[in-house]
Image 1 (tube, rainbow, N blue to C red):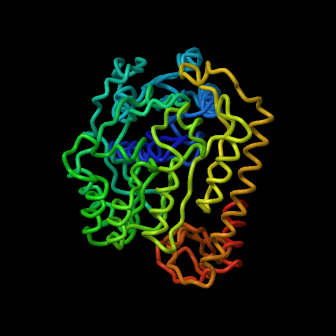
Image 2 (image 1 turned 90 degrees about the vertical axis):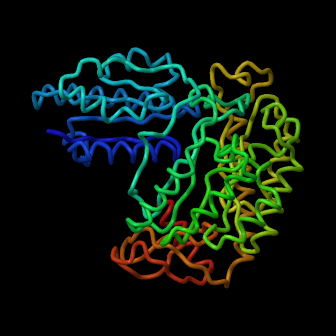
Image 3 (image 1 turned 120 degrees about the vertical axis):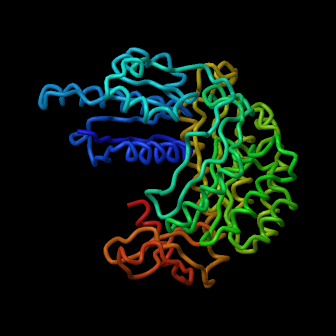
Length: 442
């Protein structure tokens, strides 16, 4: 039996890479199973961005080991277990569990996972060794590429790695320094996806703003969007999280000239306090954040902004926390991704004084989320009555749901699965937003 079951944790880059595994294994003659009972291969693409991510990764590894042992007892064969991703790359405390898996591969050689699996099942013993290597900062994308997506939209990985080394973040140690994908390969992938019927693409990466940082081209991300927009069939272009320093008036005015670029941007804000930003080693200021927010709204009158904000960073005072609250309100965030600071062993922040108690971090997160919700309602009130185009993403109980150009999730009216993928005009009002929110949360 040549079938596989895959679980993907974490970021959109992991989702992209898991899609590559799916397509590569299918090319090798494998079929994708809906559950572990029907699979001869289990693949777990792990995450390690927070302590909770590590905990979840360990839980799934344990679950796969138990299930594989159960399958051996009941069906006479033990499925191959392959674990990859950031948790596999850097977590020493999971060594005992990983020792019970067949293939363990970190981020350096993770493009080899499908061929390692196939080799192991064909009896190539050398493929079964653990392969968690130190990141050499030179991994390419020769073997990575996709032609389809499980979603209506398609994520395209344009870079890997990060050189920020923020004091709270473990990711640069696990993903390595920035490496940009070749522009020609990206545009060829855009074309493949368009030919296969995908009209919306999202450029993603570990630090999207680092794409082309070694290029002599001015604003390489803008140039990539310009060229991708020339691809027949592409109607929408979006970006992953952007550093506020990148979001200048010049950059935004350039994007605004590309009709396919959607008026929604996710900013990696993290804090509204200059002192906390400095302690985080974020390399921008509150003034830079406000300038980025203003640049978005000046370029796109109906634009929307989402953002990541961390609460309870070591030493954060109540006043500094309220700086983050005021920033979220000023930005009128449509989506506020609020996280409590998570202590990561091996990072400078883990040993900083002034660690905030868990209950206090939870309080701050709840308060910020509540205030951000009020700011969201304010922004929505400014958009009610206007007509937008919704890409129908799912059909449920005779109704269609999807995102507007500015990434508001709404009910687009009656329709069936045959209408998924179509663009539907919708006049934004409280009811369409409410029904969208209920469907998203329920």
